[in-house]
Length: 364
Ligand SMILES: Nc1ncnc2c1ncn2[C@@H]1O[C@H](COP(=O)(O)OP(=O)(O)OP(=O)(O)O)[C@@H](O)[C@H]1O
Ligand SMILES: [Mg+2]
Image (tube, rainbow, N blue to C red):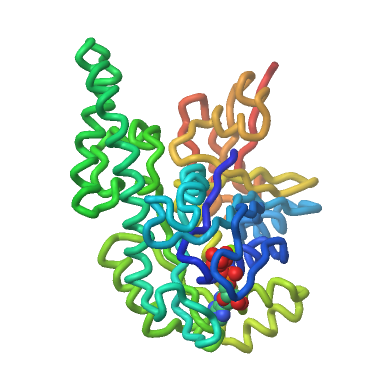
C-alpha cells in the first residue's frame, strides 16, 4: 500500500533535517540557506509499534517485521507560490501527489538560521503556507467550472455532480478556509478525486530548539493551542537533535534521550501520527518465523486485508482466524485464546479492527 506523507513548510524551517531524522540517513541535504531542497527526497520509515515486541515474545517469533510509511521531503514554499513565486508551481505539484501533509513550523530561536519572514512566528507561517495552498486549490477548481457547466447542460450527470461539489467548495476557499472543513458527508471520495491540497489531512510539527525538546516553548504552545481549538493534530519535536540521535547506535540513543528528559523519540510520535492521519490501522500475523505488522485502511474487510499480503489470499479467501490483540496477550497466545473461545472464525464481510491477530485460510 503506497501511502505517503509530504513534509511541507516555509524554506529553511528544518524539513530536510526532520526527513533525515525520520529516515535515519543523511540522504537529504540540510543546510542553513533557503531553497536548499529543490528535488523531493523520498524515504521509507518503519512504523514503531510496541505491540510487535509483546506479540513476538508470546509467539516465539524469530524476527519482527514492522510496517512502513513513506515520507517525501518537499522544497520550501514562499508567499506567492500559487502565482509561481520561488518555483511555486513545481513545488505545489509535489504536494498534490502526497496523501497527507506534515507541516513543519519553525518554533526555534536561532539568530544564525535565516528565517525568510525575518522573525519566528509559527502561526503567521502556517497561514502563509495554507493561504498558498488554498489559492492554488481555488485556481484549479475555478478553471474546471466552464467545461463542467457545458457538460452538465448536456445532461452529463457525473459532470453535474462534480460541478455541484466544486461550487460548494469555491466559496469556502474564497473565505480562506481549507476545503477539508466543508466536504459534505458522503462525498469524501469525490472530494479526494478533485486532487486538492487542502482536503489532505494535516499534522503540524513544531520544530523547537534542543533545550526545549521535552516541554516545547512559547511558540509551540501557541501552535498546540491552535490545533486543539481547530481539531487538528500537532506534535513537538526538535528536528536538529533528532537528526543527531538518529545517527547514534541503540545504547547511546537511549542514554541521550534520557539525558534530555525524553521517554520516547519525538520521531516515533510523528510517524505514528502520520499513520493515524492517513486513516491507517494495523493488523498482525504471528508465527515462529516472524511477527509482522500490516497496514490497511480503516473499514477494510478481511479479504481486502488478506490481499495486502498476497493477491491469492484475497481471491481464494475462505475465512480468517482472528484474535483481538488484548485477548492474545491476556491469554498468552493462540492456544490460550482458542481454549478460552476467543479465537473467532471470521468470514468475508468481517471488518478488520486495529490490533487483530489474523491467520487467513484460503484456497486457490
Ligand atoms: N530544531 C532546530 N534547532 C536549530 N536549528 C535547526 C533546527 N532544525 C533545523 N535547524 C537548522 O535549520 C537549517 C535549515 O534546515 P533544513 O535544511 O532542514 O531546512 P529545510 O526546511 O529543508 O529548508 P529548504 O526549504 O531550504 O530545503 C539547518 O542549518 C538546520 O541545521
Ligand atoms: Mg530542505
